Length: 379
Image (tube, rainbow, N blue to C red; front, side, top):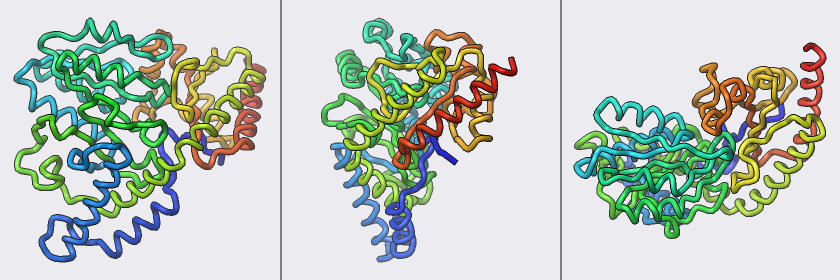
């Protein structure tokens, strides 16, 4: 099977697996226990916090470990909003956020908050002027993703953060897709909180992290919680966290080389698709974007058909975010670009990873060529 769905999840790398086993064997104590076994686990946990802070160039005291990207989004937003809702009930986000954020804001609307959902252009970019006009006196927070997981478009979070902070608005950014894929230096970005996920960087599933600027007040989701300095309940997964940070450190070191390789693979695939079908439409192209993601539409062909036929022929791809797969509804991201419901159903995402080769890209194009020819013959 040729795997081209790395934006959905990545396989654990060997070093991360080894760290998980070592930490589970040697540092098995509860990090909150007062005996020496617990203290050893706590020391490893704090070492991981320090090392993750170094990768982000951020204060380690602002890092809290979670069960993954979705929980990171929800806890960061809930904690910041509850601590600051005395300043207003207005929130801002975009129409292309991850489902965890979309669902969270939908819930807040039932609790008396007002949410402005900002549009994006045909490439998936947010217009700063549109953002500026949306800010009100009672706006307390905006949640705007760094990179889109379906088409790869990168938002100008430095400029976005500067605008929001100039108006006294808190800024949360979902960085799950961009962490260790493109540079993310928090000393240079005016952001108040970000979310990260382990299984996007070759670490274990069920682990993630939140960074909240220590100077920003927040209110824990559950009061009187003791784990993670009160940020979240539940025994801390120290082996998983150690494995996550190990994987992140290695991928961060490899990032420059990976960026260049992914750009080459992406362009190679685009060229091959152009040879196969002159009608193939690349979504979000010609803007600053994640080099490992390629979103494509084949007009007249449902993405679900392409996915199933690719799978039958040994190629794993997706029709969008894995958190929305199986709902049989058009991609909200593609509709937000101005496409019709029918066009959104044509969407297919290809995403590259450490193990992707030029040979695999060529073979993937051949598989697509065969199934496209078969489809049009039968029409």
